[in-house]
Length: 152
Image (cartoon, rainbow, N blue to C red; front, side):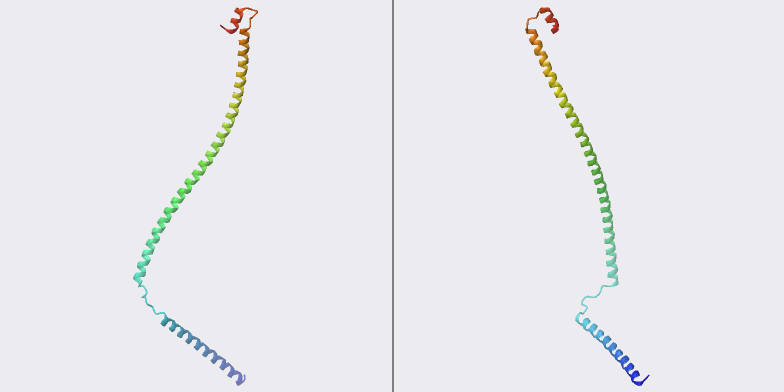
């Protein structure tokens, strides 16, 4: 190797070392400026204070856990009640459908019976009218036979 090549390598290594020293120095100066610009006004909490705070938060977490368990139990009860209500509504709807079908059947039967009753009344009215007409007309058989027909 030549002396020029060794000299260049030593110069590069020294240049890198100088740059690293300058970077570290710049970081230290920036940290000092930041510390001077933002002084610590409030003292940090002591270890006993932190332990007390932690105990308080744990107690609060336990209370919240119990409340969540109670809410979970209530929500399960409500879900059960809702399922039962839905089942009841479904059963009531089925019963209502059955009752509607029965009402339709009963209505058609009633209409049929009313029609039969109307025909019977018309027939009975015709028969009664015919009897009244026959009773009012003089009979060739005599009155005695006429009374026997009426059942008197």
